[in-house]
Image 1 (cartoon, rainbow, N blue to C red):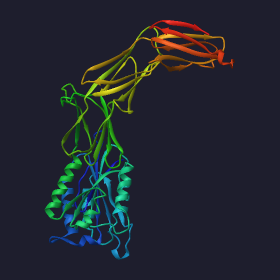
Image 2 (image 1 turned 45 degrees about the horizontal axis):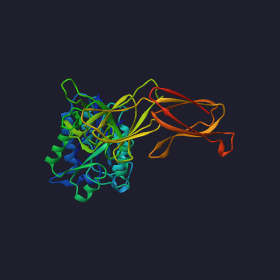
Image 3 (image 1 turned 90 degrees about the vertical axis):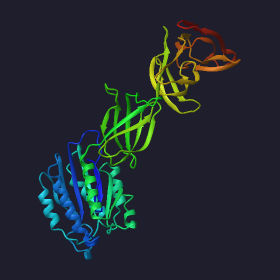
Image 4 (image 1 turned 45 degrees about the vertical axis):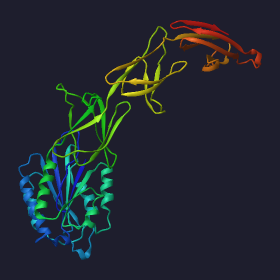
Length: 452
């Protein structure tokens, strides 16, 4: 269950995030009835102003489809002198047509007790039914700061990281600057210091809570056109690092990238799973509108070809960014893979290995790398042998592969065409003079028998 906070310091704002369209929106009003709410904002008592505007807003919600609301109150049963730090209660739970019950409960509230933000938030998360497809919003309405030694920031952070809530919105009513700053770590803070300002914020938040927000990710080619497609993308919460959504991007028959439902409460980091991955951090989604986010992801293809009658069991190639040790992929031969355009270094895991540097991958083109078909060496010995196969490189012996000293009889080794030298000795012979040396040539598609 995901819960989005709209923290009110008499005001509110939010909505949560889902890849699927939520089947219902649930809004929990978390109302501060502590003693400080008897203070004034302008000519009106803050409690009276908050009750009046909240009741008016509830009237406007009666006709909204697929909506349920509830009311939790804190600081309303025990006088502040007793400092009851557990004075919070779900007064009206979620159910259909409970609008009159909430308005009646609001009407009887009087500013009385202690402000307990952290504990109330923690308790409020259990008020929502366990429905993963609902959009759950908490609206905290308060004018004050924590008075019970709780840590609203820690509670908010823990609940976000555990996927219980989304990033809170805080709207302060009649708060001083110092008090307002204490909420910046809890979520997004909005200041409401007038009746009109508070009323306007309520309407904005309701609009955001009830409207779907859509996102279109445009993967751009080198001409800045949204032609790249069929790539998986993952979205992470910018604050918690929690994975929120992933999908394989497509383009429809009209040539337009597809659209998903996303929650605007959070900022997102997105990873486009190209080779190598492309990332974009701190994406802000505007609520109630269709958002289009472009990301540069130009791609071309690399085709690796190895044919012939004699073949490797599985021939692979290590792909690295040119001039670095960063491995981008290990690609099988006789396959084609897409890569972000640029230069790459290749290490072909044939026997022996071959390297090719600064291979260019160009937009929408296929770069083909082919190697000669290998041949086969059938090495036979009636005894276990110690030794290795080498090739000459700039008048120096270059190691290629060791013989298997545990095998008696035939060893079949796939080798690239070229001239080689085998240096070996029967394992049971302990004399240097028992070393045997043989030069041989491997040709593509041919099998060479060699015995010791």
